[in-house]
Length: 134
Image (cartoon, rainbow, N blue to C red; front, side, top):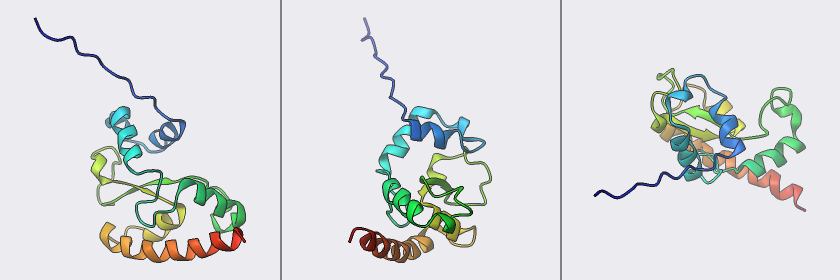
């Protein structure tokens, strides 16, 4: 007689639901797998390490720097390889990005190239955050 398997349902966070519903094609990825992927990112931009909370703080201080305040309140999805048009084809092609990195990366830089640029973006953002904390 075989063991009865228990299926554990992951509690899907509101932030994951927002990201999951933000891009056409993500429905090809199981939402539990997407939640696990998101959790592995620790709520940080893949390029510069800025957290969602830090992004919101910077948005509140510099709202006009973000396309009229429509973006930047939260982390966004980026495609590591932009030639893959559909976000849902491969979860390994997704990156979690702050507004500033996602906006600056465009389709020109590779993931590895932009990681180097992301270090400098983080330095500048950290200076701004430090000024706000004084």
